[in-house]
Image 1 (cartoon, chains in turn brown, cyan):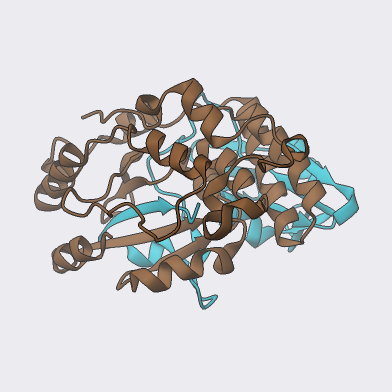
Image 2 (tube, chains in turn green, brown):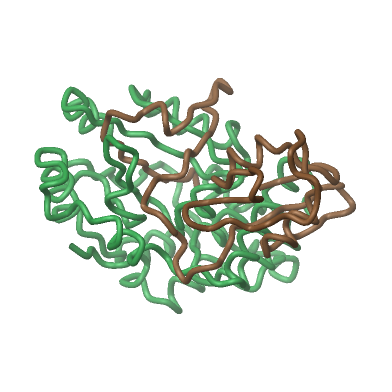
Length: 244
Length: 114
């Protein structure tokens, strides 16, 4: 979705590097990457290093880095370019109720693509002179908080991802649960875990179901699910608002 | 980072965490932490390292692996605005490092297929 923007900006010395956060690794990310046919580097982050090292808690999020390797904007919500909204999926078969409910909640999620992309173009044109390029001190201040509990949560999550890589589902679930408790604001930590649960009713939307099977709710190994959490937290709060 | 077994390759630790191991111990930005064991070889004892640096760690003995988490000295996840040298593979398994892109502005974009 960003390819047109990237191709337009690349001659100005800008590169887009996409990072797929998925403990299923290349296998999980391949279909989406091949469909996008990127002209930019598309990397695979099996253990969510983007969370540990940059503080990513939701997707899509971005970090801006200047030519000297300095972060000028720490992690924040990165909506697609305003002209680039994907139409809702259409099919001949009616969707299962849960997916209809998910789409209804998702439709209420608030983003501000105009302000983000205005700021992005301003930075690309003006570089360090842009008001949107933050000083190193401001970058540090604005970066996510990190407590001992949170740091431990990152360790549990990485271990869970490695357990997924080694096909050890039970061990993975245990450590995903620990990570969820220690890093409660991370949507990616919850969504990654939920997306790995196989639910027959989900059909081709398996990874987006992220909740119990209608016929076997008691076997759901997590304390919550996407629909419950977004209703409780409110779709308007899904992404933090843009901050100049 | 994930450690298989009891020892960690020193260069891997440096690459993945941004800490440098030298004669003063483990150093990053203005901080150096002395290490109470021999640390000028190619490997380090993983658990003793994590304990000396007060890094969180979690073990899965069934798989003979452990995970060492990030430091939490300050209150912010970033102690410096210098971007860590993230190093990740592409679909073909080729490793790319953020430092390869010095000289360009970079938009680092996190997404997921779920």
